[in-house]
Image (cartoon, rainbow, N blue to C red; front, side, top):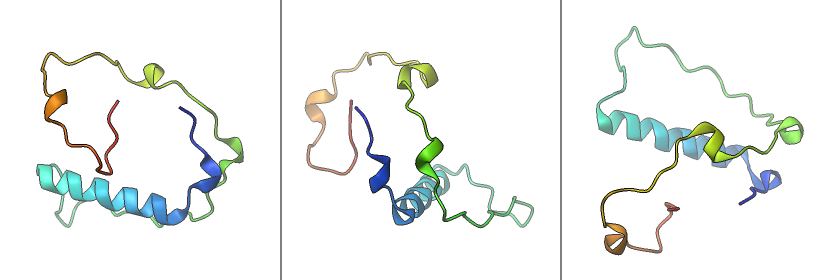
Length: 82
């Protein structure tokens, strides 16, 4: 599946960063102390002209699960499944 990078906006990016930060906090993995590294200002000029396509298999080891939970998944949400 190819992504149309021209449709990506800074609002999409900021939303994704906020959701990931919430996820990390929920897992209890966030360093919320005063010694935690500070986030840098986001460069809002996303230069997509140098972005290249990549295969997910080059980054992740993809394998099937041993469970049979597929039938328990509920469709229609925002989270995609492969």
